[in-house]
Amino acid sequence: MLLVRSVSKAYQNCRVLNEVSFAMNSGERVALMGPSGSGKSTLLNCLSGLDTPDEGSIIFDGKELTQLSSDERTFTRRGRLGSIFQFFHLLPTLTALENVALSLQLNNYSVSDQVELAMDMLEEVGVAHRAKAFPMEMSGGEMQRVAIARALVMKPKLILADEPTGSLDTKNGERVLNLIEALSESKQVGLILVTHQEETTRICHRTLHIHDGMLSEEALK
Image 1 (spheres, helix red, strand yellow):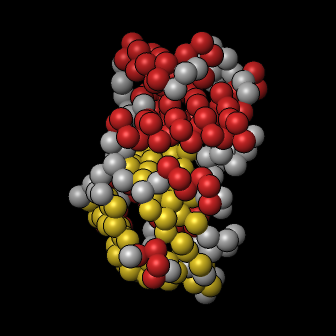
Image 2 (cartoon, rainbow, N blue to C red):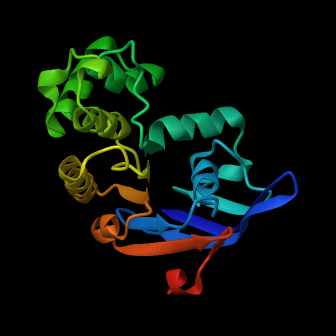
């Protein structure tokens, strides 16, 4: 489902990624660990198509991302990739329902389908009762559940989750992790989970360690 081959990236002559290579199967959950500045965010940006590597290739769902046009990468990101962030990134002027439905709107779904599919996802993550609430009216746990619904509403092949429990207390963090694991399993959605907490990796099948832009040999076994 995902094949990363010898990906390198530099900014202002500083090499951030150094020949990173790994592969993932459909439905596999992989944790990515490393200290600040190790290249985790840059790797996620390359995988999502927001950035392009200087060298190497990224083949996702049968397509070489580095050979796609900017519009084609955007289309792939909207339809085949989902993202979950530490600070939720919900639009503050939209309700929970509207935040989830936005991806459907951008992909030209009818209004009726937008509402139906978005409500179905809010129901799946347990916050359908907050459909009309704005982000400022919700708790952190509720906002992250809405963000998960938004990430999954287009039925992506892969979820990129960047510290998804980093802004939550322990109890809500556990609930969100369990929810991500359950949805990944039931929908056979791949997951790359960026975290600095060893205990968070429990929902993943394996862990990759990145340091100074390089994956450790241990991670590739």
